[in-house]
Image (cartoon, rainbow, N blue to C red; front, side, top):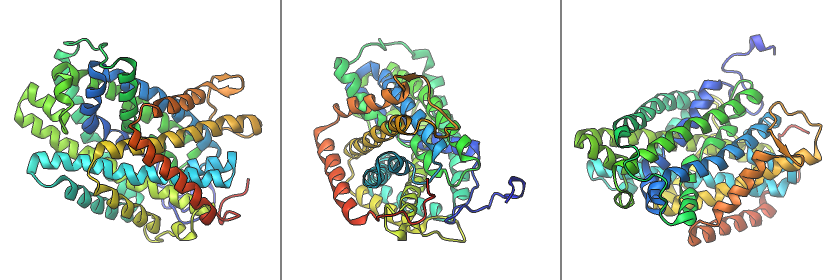
Length: 441
């Protein structure tokens, strides 16, 4: 089929529809990222790093940027929904691919309920309803939207993204007169505090890498996905740093550390209760949006793994009328519901970070290994500069992931390591000897 005859409803092999352009993919990335960390975790992070919490966001952004460029190169080479699992498959083989994909699925299965619990906290502040029950209800509603189709999901996400960015812009504007009222270079706990907060708020950047799972639903993926990855990291970093600097300038970090709705506290201090309530409502849109897009992108990873024979074929089934991987969506949402019952967003965020760090080590290592083993392979997007033949941003991303993992809570490390071991054990049972539907290389 020629390019001129392709329609927005064109299906790639396997049933997914190519309906998303550069704007849609970029908005998706920004919308996933902007919901959780800044609306929910900035207070807890301030309790770790003090007035220097905005620097922790920059440290986390450095890791995100390096890894984002690695994702961009690999996605331009292998534009598949399997994303990280597909990259690990190409670099290190099928068992490594399964374990990587397992952790990728775990990121989404755990991150979704973590943000949903943040949504529940804001609803509780506004209405008094139980936050855990609200989180469960949100997951059910988002699952129904995701099943309806990718066009419906992205359209709603774009509308909500405009609302949530407006809320953060309002916080920056009203708090700007107080910016710098405290010593923004004062870091509670020194280097340990800075990196400990960075390890926590890296959860705030979770989601930009999930743009890669849309590779089979975007037009011209080798160009679209790299652009969307870079745009989402840059835009969210600027917003995060400004908001974090403003909030500690307005409200003492000790007070922020005890709040589960920190931005509402900041706005109430500046503009009064009515505006604080408005920010709480906007936070609902932001966290809703993040849950929606996490539940949309996670199943795409499962779908891509099934096509490569890395998961049972049932997860590759597509609802023909809607173009959605319905079995994977229902499975992912079911696991998310189970984690939502835990009710502790801090613990859930830390466990999610372990899975993210694992993914990022593999993705950055894959770029470096493929540079060495397939130097002549076509790379529509190429990470620069290089050091000793290896991309410098990938080295930073890999090293940063290992460094921040040291500053995680011990229990999060134990739970994350257990998930990693379980994934390795399952690889002996679930990994097929040959891919079922993946293109040959």
